[in-house]
Length: 93
Image 1 (cartoon, one colour):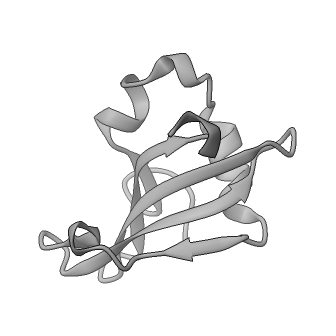
Image 2 (cartoon, rainbow, N blue to C red):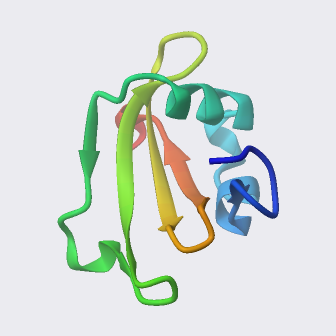
């Protein structure tokens, strides 16, 4: 996928502005998505995105400093893009 909006990826308002106390930079998220993922989940009923008719995925990975990181993305396969919905550290949940 291409990098950058409007084709490629973009962040939801929640990902950009909610939970700023988590101190997770977009560079950490993008780095983690470019690495080999530790685990991917999409088995909950609320993981289905009816707007794009695709599944949302929670991806366990590592950030630039090798700290554990989970990123939730909404895939839009038709437009070859995805939205970063949220991000958190597993210890934050």
